[in-house]
Figure (tube, rainbow, N blue to C red):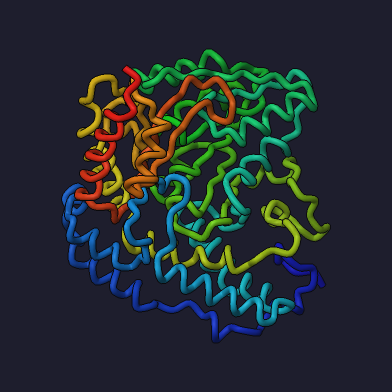
Length: 439
């Protein structure tokens, strides 16, 4: 008899053991969070977003390194203390008896709490979600697995994530497909301008349109649904990279009208590093080849989750972050990150020579702010901020060797980042910019 597990072949190894140990329960941290949220329930999200005392209380649930200001949360978010404890508990549980407990953890926690939780967050059936290791694996599954032949087109842009572009270039070399690489303006004048650019590029030969929900190199939020409608009219399918929007921008899959959707869980969801997800429409599952050949019994999304023996405790540890996100509230979190982005940006954008990669419309970006500074060596500034001030930001340039014409600094605070910390960053940034000026 074969099991539905993504990890093992024999169902007899997966059931029964550990049920009492791993039964979901409300921990003290979640209960405290519920109390804090209850105290502000009914207040507008925009008001709560500016309540520094509220977010300082949220911060107490994280063990952050002393003396370091982390403004690179767009790379990976830290785990909460509860999440860290949960990860350690599950790792210990599995490693003591892996032959049985890899499967029991999958059956008792990962399937109901992680897959089920993601399905609830995104408004889709759990049967349409597969768990992978990161957004790259999710997206590359579709890019490399969708049947295409010479002459078929993929439409993408220089602002898409470099790993997805690597996969597209591999297919171009391997099968002779046509790649239409768009170069979006910086910043967009309007969403209509961007939609029109894709409208001109998508043809009846277009097989797949890659869309980044929010670009990691510009911060720009894309009008995905409008572009998807154009693609579908031409018979093309749409793959959405939601690595920078899952658990940051409140949305459902239906809001995007896409055919495939991939994301990392270790970014804004605050799950452990090494967790991701892939969603696709049920009717697409029969035609997309998995990255790793799956067992004969694997059907539906199970065949895309298969990767051989896997540290199941990483996936299972996403259960607490999902509960944290839902308890905190999607719109409340989004409002906080919008507020923080607007706060520090307003103190930087007036400087002579500064150009942000998105407009100052708050809806143009959320959480990610990227800017360049004429006459200032931002790469040197980034190094100085870390080495002298222990402020972590990211310098973005050339997008893995491609001529993107981007030379920017990316700043990504977290929900508990304080305005006083952002003031410290702005002050240190301006001082370092003066010292690194090339004028």
